[in-house]
Image (tube, rainbow, N blue to C red; front, side, top):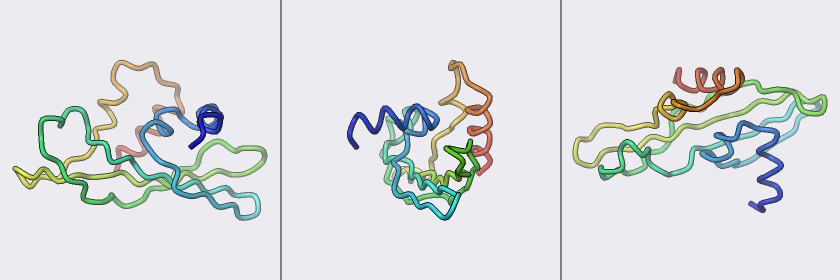
Length: 118
């Protein structure tokens, strides 16, 4: 994605979403904007010593975001999961670890709380 577009998107959407997820598609229905995100295939840092293989995604969750220019906005988010080749365990990113030590806005904290439920 062009850096100009990326900079603009970072002003509108949570920065961690732009940094950790790819916008796969968008669709507009009347006054409703749907944005579809998939977590990038970058294993969590805390599992960097393991051999992980991407095993698809968790069930998609939908979160209502702040309206944009009079449009209701829904973020459709698919979190990735990996399989540890040695143990057979499923691994996923711990979004609470991502947030540690950061200064969060209320909206960012609410978003993390929502995606951590699944």
